[in-house]
Image (tube, rainbow, N blue to C red; front, side, top):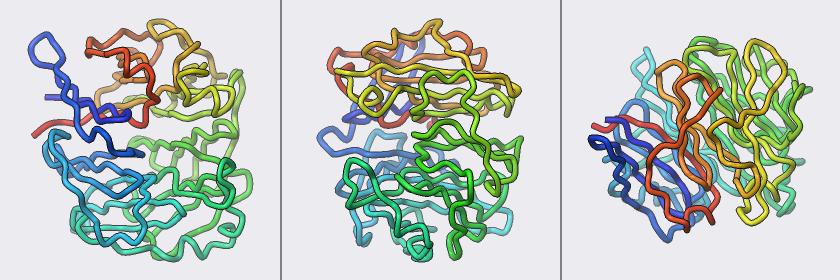
Length: 336
């Protein structure tokens, strides 16, 4: 059974039973920041908060704190890889504010800091504009094909990579995105990277050695969400606004979804989605089924069966109080 986890001010666990969606709430009252599913353990999900890290082993129905030994408790990013062919167990990574990165190979019970990240030369320039005295790890992207290759985005100032799981790091390169918010990779395009950044859309065809910025057709260039059609690496969707004030705050929100395929310019997508006015930036989720994409924002959850050209509302109960919250993450996972 497929389950959607929608992370707002609480975690919504939405499961379809017969013809109706049933929703449970969890983690209410905690300062949530991020979430990620473990692809090697069906039903296992990690959730970061400003006060520590939590894990669920039953698709979000129950949670318990883990990683109490982490020296920094403000978790800002989490990602989990898959076991590799060398027999290494799946690695989980968490990033924090201020920017530190930790790795676990035992399901998050113990953590090891990857200290070489903060020794990079660019670290002296990292700074988060609303709080310039600090910065944080915004996104962690684990390569789905090449073991040990991991990409980390610092907000703001750098997109960096490691080729050995985090022992050594390579600093940002010319023309790379400065302010990546989310990233995507694709199993059928091994060296391709996609970046939705505050400074626009970027992609790389050589695993981040070089980058290309392409904003043709993007009338709104503050990008937050990104996804790629599981069946076609050239079909990409992003969520966009004119800036942070219009991206996250429901009272002032105005956001858009753009789509492109096979190198064409971006074009706005509207069919079946709510009006941009009052809509916070959309987050996306995919599985392995080609052309199937889920999307969510403060007005509900939506589904596309044609790789994002047209959308329909998913019949998940959506009380009016949800419309007053910005979305943090959308996950699609298989229950046990």
